[in-house]
Image (cartoon, rainbow, N blue to C red; front, top):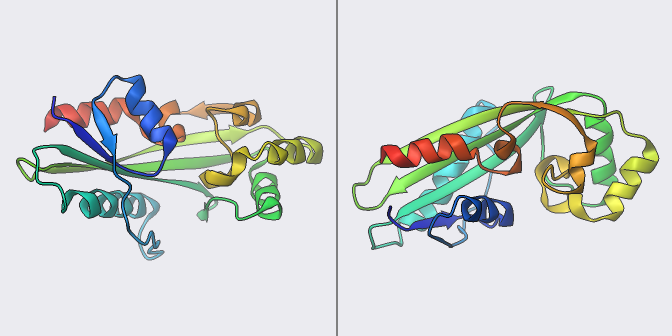
Length: 187
């Protein structure tokens, strides 16, 4: 398989590609990740994943695959980003506490050699336990919420906050590995 360039700043996406033993290097994209609220949630993640992939692919001359991805956490049509501070993290976790939300990840694979492009997305439903103020505050003190959309990391201590999921676990981490790998084999 061709070498992959991961157009991402996410250590979790790199961890997932390492987990499935893919040969890749990381080149973070330099884009302004603006959300177009006129688009559907699914179209937003597909568009941002394409923009990330394209920003890196346009500078690559070798026959590689370039992969970009974007993840949103959504509850009641409200997009929840990465917490800006402790207060914001507390508000997000209180909002998610005891309820279902969606994690939507879009990914784009650009085959530099053939110029073929695949853009897909995956939706996973997540139910968080009802959390006490103490549980929320203790989790925030770990600092884990601050670089993650929705303010939690299911692959870390945030796993203790999750009651159940419906769909792909890896999607919540940042890349729906089964769908991604099937798409990669199509190119």
